[in-house]
Length: 422
DNA sequence: CCCCATGATTCACA
DNA sequence: TGTGAATCATGGGG
Image 1: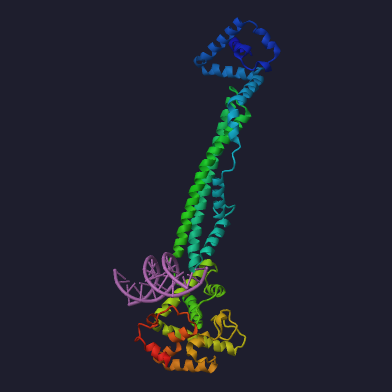
Image 2: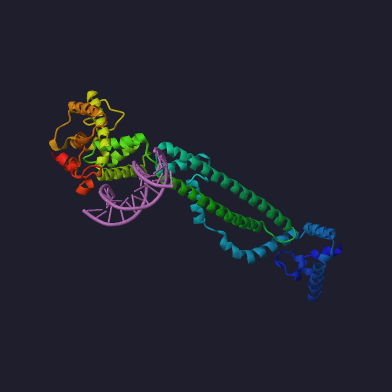
């Protein structure tokens, strides 16, 4: 065991931090020859370490740790190490927050995937649904589907994240233990361990970033699918169509609802009030105008139906004075919210240019004649109610329409014009 | 499976 | 920018 004590003798000749060693240690190695001898011994011992048994090595290790000079030597070695190799890396230490990671985090948070609780997901889904608009019943089905998928993604994400964190912690602990253990035999400062931990964390966070990236992609795909599904044609409900038609036919002279009117219509139709719902209404009116104009004959019946409806409502409204009608938004003469282009639109459309104002009796007679006709009117009477000429003359919204396009293909060309011009 | 109705999209125009 | 016109695409009925 004297070997060990010799090995552990702090010797200036070994070239280690002489300055921090007690002065007396320098006194033993005065002559260069003796120093060389010592170095030779030490090297010899090092070289033969591999030949030693495990027990022997353990014993030596223990002796080393217990040596009185060990702490001092250790700290000096650490200091040197710190000053040489590790100082280079210190520059990289202060890494700024990765903007990419920040973006991913923000997105996951916004999508409700990385939110604090499950409610976030539904909030995001609701936002998406509101942004996309849609009729509420269908909306809720798609909505729940979207939410379910999002929750699935969220769960996978959290599971994976947890796994990574656990693996990271395990690995970090393992490495720390290893380094602590090794720090008994080689100079490893706590700072170095810290640095190593930081490196491990960095590595794991880059893996986490990949996870976040793919989660974001999954959410984006889900979202686009959700929105695509929404883009699919979905017919308005019967009620919604009725409301839109009522507005259309009661504003036949100028079927261009204002933004407010569109909003109001969207609400009444049960469409989520949003930019999309407004364009849905706009689409509807755009299609309606063009299709109506193209084939007025085909829409005669429909027009008459709504004429009667509106007229009846108007009657009811006038009878109930200020009572508002819950069934239809358009009540001529009342303060209905859609009555933006004047109360006489419908009647101007019905009665042409004669300029008659609305009278309850006229509506009654209209109803009477319609019931006599065994339906909603046909032939002359219906043509008189809604003729292209009336619309052109009144609203002028068909200015762009050529006479041929206005003429109904279902009727003899010109018949409409001749009828209405009389 | 075909046809039709209809919501959505695209493009040109004023 | 809103609209008309053409067109696409889809859903539902026969």
